[in-house]
Image (cartoon, rainbow, N blue to C red; front, side, top):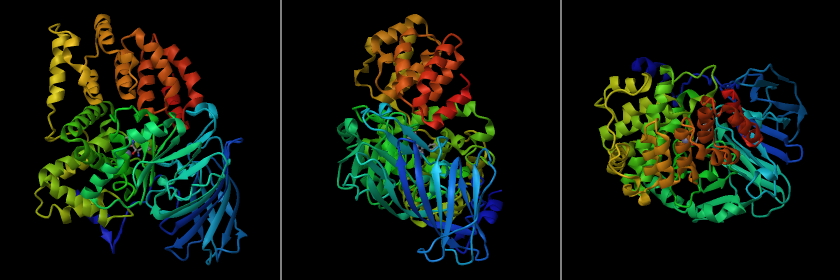
Length: 608
Ligand code: BES
Ligand code: ZN
């Protein structure tokens, strides 16, 4: 099986052969867009982007007569073409019929000499990749806010392009907006000192479409070190720069382990709390949720994660969303190595163990075919490809290889892997080939186990996990309390980190008596926790138990936080509780307008 895979997927003259991306209409193998010029006006009154995108083309097949771009819910107003980049003429185009998953192909006629095309367009309110916030929905409540979220296939909802991770583009952009607002992009933001509503960006390094990102708001900047800084609404700026102060140390650690940081600067952008993810690895400027700003750096592994993508994902990119483990599994591995270096083995181990617990829970819920590292997402929404399997099972595979070959040897191998495939998009077979040639020449890691890891469902074989004495002590104390042999006040919780709390809560039995719940509440006030991870873990546990103290804070939480990792499981538990379901439906009606379109879509599916 592996051999067959190598034969089909092997490199020919340096260009890896790949199956076409099942989530794109683009004919990028015949003609590819290699540089974009974006020219957009950000209109907050009508909540739309208006302008054009220019595609500078490179033809692999000189005979090709059309360029096919991906679009979704865009209004196309004109298309022009140029042979010299100076003179532009209208050119025929056709917006095809809508595919529920992929959107509409935009087919543009090319002349033999066409070098570039410009597509004039406007976005519509259905853009899944944009969230427009009114001033009221921001932290400061003074100015409106806009941000994009392109991964995996939402870029096409805000600009017509070849929306596939198999292609890369450099780009430049001219963004016009209100003079009191600042625009930032996944590009060089250094020219943005003058706040006048007209902003220019350059991204000289080629990136896949899902890494093109834009945000506009009442943003301010604070430097953290020479190469790192934070953009945020004023209210968050100081807190964020304290919380993220170790970013430079993380970058130094990753540089040592995996090779020089390739993107020049690394800044973080704190988004409004409706941001549907924890973080998004937009190059040079990761987008992050404010829910990780807790005052104690406890959730900072998320910064390590997004920073890690600077190598795994942004530099070496999965060629299609079937190989998402190449992005996320590698990133979880790199993240954990960074955490080990900066915060020590014990914290990194606790984070790994919590991840593994979440993976085991998830595997129990998923159909077996989706627990393979390489699922086939053809005909399915790639949003659904991101779950614990590619992240944590992928991470465990790399941990297993690191244990087998030795940590240092394995990290050196990864460093060569990042150098070898820098600025390229690859699929799993390219990784396997490189692994076989560079690390596993003696085949000491058996083909059979590799095959098992990559193609078989679930977790099998032996996985060597670290043990955590801290976690063991916590479990033991919890057991004693459950047996009535000790009181909660004797558990010495005042030194507990967030990880210890999460372990404690997640290990509690699903059935607790009202007295036990009250005892926990009296001792720890968990329903009042301001840490979103702790709050969510606790709320998930107590919703099925009708714990009355959770109601008010839960309502408050659901109305103010839009991160799907928290709100989707919470609404799911609420829906499953017949006594709270209609209350939850009411909260959802109230909260929904503040949620991101992607979160709305997820939650609508629940059918509350
Ligand atoms: N690339 C993801 C964000 C993402 C996920 C975008 C799914 C589109 C679809 C990002 O790097 C990520 O994994 N974020 C995680 C945090 C991480 C620490 C596991 C998140 O958002 O929770
Ligand atoms: Zn990630």
